[in-house]
Amino acid sequence: MKDMYTEKVLDHFRNPRNIGEIKDADGIGTVGNPVCGDVMTIYIKVKNDIIEDIKFKTYGCAAAIASSSIATELVKGKTLDEALKLTRNDVAEELGGLPAYKMHCSNLAADAICKAIKDYKKKKNK
Ligand code: FES
Image (cartoon, rainbow, N blue to C red; front, side, top):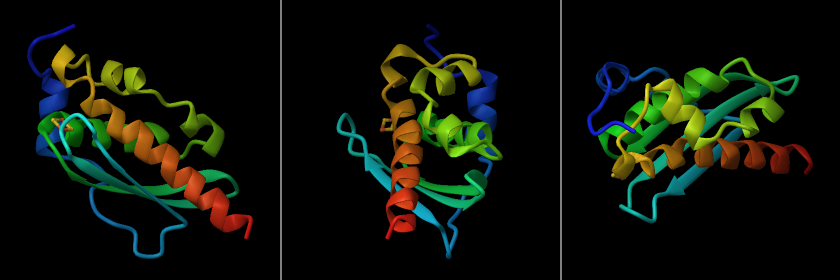
């Protein structure tokens, strides 16, 4: 476990991918981080069980922004089942590691994606 941010974390923090909002999203998931109070929302567009588009908005620290950015890249184009398997460790690993005290920040992304998928499924079954 590293004490400092990797170059990849800094890159995704400075140039976040898929940032923003999808107005006609098929699923939306918002989660708050109990450790620090930060909040993240994920928007997804789904077609044939595949995440066609994904965007995020985060009120959070650098690690939360970088985690959201990389997590959206990891699940874009994946099936819903594949996306549901994303864990905070996958996110942290893809970023080249996060400082131990920042691991909780990577929870937000995986949790918000999971919530957005559940929201989509709930709406679809109505
Ligand atoms: Fe809140 Fe990182 S300190 S998400």
